Amino acid sequence: MKRNINKEKSIGSLNKIRRTNAPPLEKKYINIPLPDELAKQIDSVIKTAELGYKTKSEFVKEAVREKLIELAKFKGFKKK
Image (tube, rainbow, N blue to C red):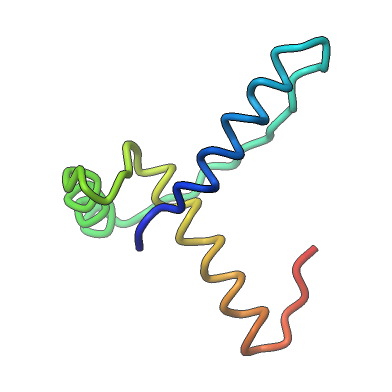
C-alpha cells in the first residue's frame, strides 16, 4: 500500500481553510486492540520510510479505508 500524495495535498488545503475563521473539525476516536505480532508487523512497515507511514494509526486508517472500498465494490456494501 502506497500513500496517495494528492490526498495529502488536499488535506494541506483543508488545513489552510481551517486556519481561517472556520471552527476546527471534530474527530472522535475509538481504540481497537491488535495482537502483538500484528502490531510488530505494522511497525516494520512504518520503519520502511519509502512507504510514507509515520504511525500505526496512519497505516491502520488507510488499510481500513481500502478494505471498505473493496467491500463496496465486490460485496455490494454501501458506504455511509
